[in-house]
Length: 114
Image 1 (cartoon, rainbow, N blue to C red):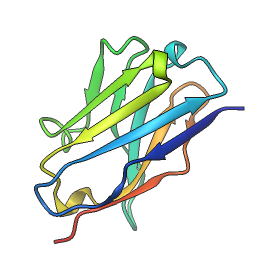
Image 2: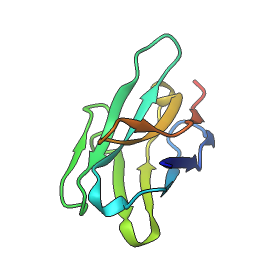
Image 3: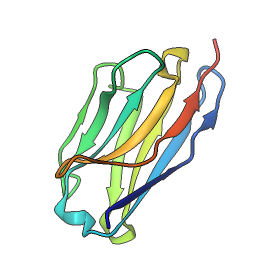
């Protein structure tokens, strides 16, 4: 079955960096557009970034542009989200996402205190 397992979250001070990882299993990663969503308390889940099957096309939310980078290594079944210059408003639970079938990981918390 499809599994998406996130890691790399945690508590980081404003201005710091984190790198989230998503290890995929149960399907062939290179056949799928992937992405990262996030959901803050009391807010709707929002797309942070997505990446095409071969990594050639990426899209970012305005809030992520210039600070976050999505990447992938299909041979390693892994998708990453490098997050730099983190702000308190980046605090949320982050979810790995597979576009086809709308599959989600269990999510991982990122906290940036104010």
